[in-house]
Length: 218
Image 1 (cartoon, rainbow, N blue to C red):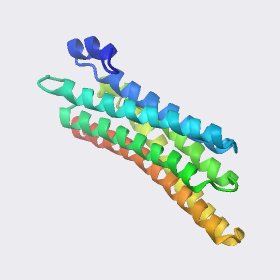
Image 2: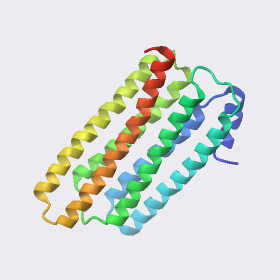
Image 3: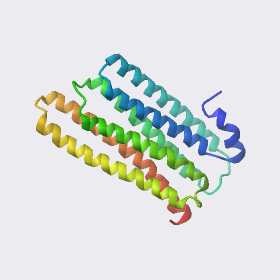
Image 4: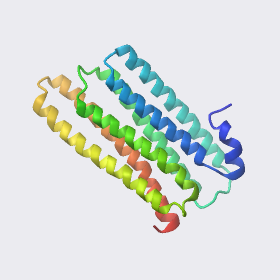
């Protein structure tokens, strides 16, 4: 059965998009957790295995997005419009793409060490993924869950701001303390892609927030 196939009866009969979003969020949580594991090990073979796992999730995510878009065609949904649902699903898929790029960058750069600040950035990515996992099921009843949705969006924004601060502090740290220009460039590039990952996750919550405002005025 296809990735979305197990959800088809629910989605097709009740127009319930939540199981699809839940699977996307599960991919985000799985890949972000694996990204942290890549940084916590210095074993190159383990890092390669983790990178393959992330790549598999990204490919599965692409397939799920395609089936989701096909399923939306010709269907009448409730409060949330098809274009809004597509925007949310596509932004989630974009997150997976960035996570995959981050994992690949770790293998390509092969840094001599992983500073604690860099690991902290990866953990913020993981925390944002968890926040999105908690947020998306609330869209099933947009009007009833207005306050909770807003609070979860605020949480994602707080985490993204924390990641911005951590990124800026880390860049200052490596410029001051890393004497090897080549290694410093590696750390800087890795930090940049991790910061981009947190931005991509905030983009999901921003779309949700706009959808909330559009359909409830709040």
